[in-house]
Amino acid sequence: MFDRAIKHDLLWSSAASEAVEENQRWILTAMHRYGHELVTMLWRILGNEQDVCDAYQTTFLHLAHLDGGQKPRWVKAYLFRTASNTAISMLRQRVVERKTLSSMTQTGEEEPTAEVDFDARRLAENLRSHIAQLPEHLRDVITLRDLGELSYAEVARIMGVSTGTARVYRCKAVQMLAVWVNDEENR
Image 1 (cartoon, rainbow, N blue to C red):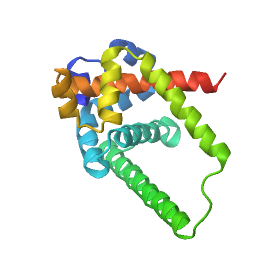
Image 2 (tube, one colour):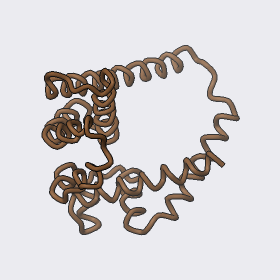
Image 3 (tube, rainbow, N blue to C red):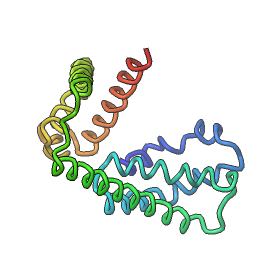
Image 4 (cartoon, helix red, strand yellow):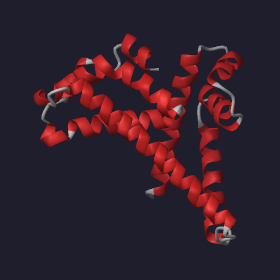
């Protein structure tokens, strides 16, 4: 996904460069120079596309807000240390969540209340209706990948597209769904 963006110069367009203040352009340079290596490292640690995207974004946000936007002396070292710490924190959070869930089931705590159950059902129905509104190619990717739990390679083979295209379609679908669900919640 990252390689495709670089090849098509989507991340480094002149519009993006002009929108960034002069003293922050070094961040775009760092993204361009180390982004691929960083994504590779995060994939090895996290193994999950959404977590990789979250860790990548968090890393560059830390970098942008470091000491009022000052450029660190060793950008690559800071970048990779921040990314690895972010990924480790995410993994630790998963462990805590699993332990909490496990302890709840072992101690026999009550099941979620009817109100929580109703909210979950309403959210699921809402999400299904939004999935149905997606363009067919995006809906197919979401259905096969997320609901059918197929790999990107299998989704690509079924749809007759490349694996990268399947990933891009899923990303677009998730973005559209997030906007729609968010808009509905804010009403």
